[in-house]
Image (cartoon, rainbow, N blue to C red; front, side, top):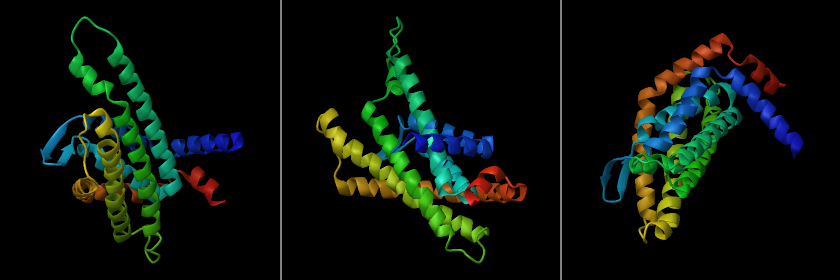
Length: 241
């Protein structure tokens, strides 16, 4: 077990040195921002709600799609785990700061940055589940384009399919855990039904897919440039052996 952990850490270290810093920075930053922006609901009607996280969620999945295309699904999942670890570290710092007593009333600040443990748990589980599904599906769809795996059609198809399903899983896991499991316990009996969770998750996935369609040309351009520049050659060579 110790040997496997050391190998995983060594492999992840090589990967993080191989991925250009702007992409890994955007991935990590988008995951942290999603956690904060989700505290604000920007639209709500009945049981359907859209939180501020949708503004940056597309960036997270765009980065995963770029990494999957160039380095593979395993690499994208490793990068996602790294981003989640940084997010949990930030959440811990935010929670500590929100608990520090002050003479001035910072209840609004503490409410946003302090968070609830079950919200953090639910969002973390939802993110890692959606990341694994997105990356694996993206790679699987890409293998279907044998004639021209690096073409626009291949990139857009694999990105759109994986993003829609990945975002649906993210929304569904989060909604199910928060509104069906924890809300009845901690929010005075308030809860959602399974059909409500499914419909809300589906609508959210369509909105997030739209954002992916708008910004996916950026991802395609990045992967083309990486391929031309032989980005991450050491990592790719190590995993090709």
